Image (cartoon, rainbow, N blue to C red; front, side, top):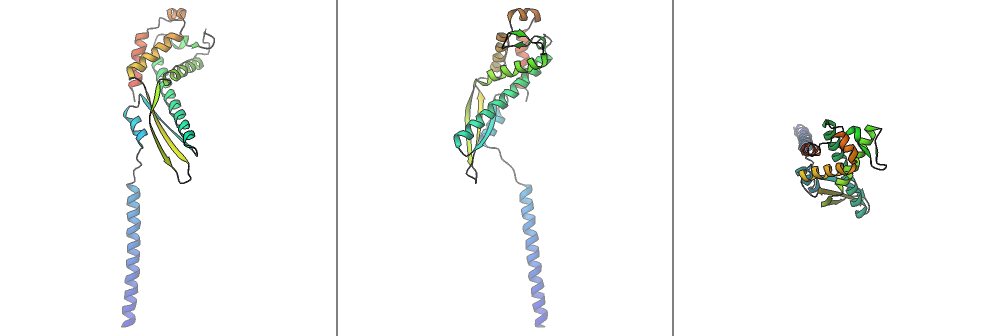
Length: 200
């Protein structure tokens, strides 16, 4: 009888351990399912005004180097986004912009339209990015003692001002004789640019 009670006790103990182990693995699995990756303050700020802000991240063992990398990435990301909007806005414009994109280095009318149009848009976008400032920095120190730094930069003005800035730069870079030939409607272009910049 004692052997039977001992066997029953051992079986009960094994069963309870097994159930406990299964229960804990289920809890772990449910925790994994509910895990949410939250964005940091820089990413949250960028999401509030995506047309006017950009975020970059840098990692390095020196904090200042990590910050410099983050700033360069944010500016590059912002310039690419603006250049893309410029190309989209000018592609729909029936004013002959692409045919008269100017090689700013020599002042000659471009012969390789696609490449020069890309260079032109990128050059203007880089000019717009100069009017940005870092509004927030966030940093973490990893277990390997490496700094992860995020920066959020913002264009100093609103979308309407950015569209005006882009239009002014286009006006400056196109020679007067080409403006006459292409009958460029700058106000229409500014409106098109503002519409493109407001798109998410």
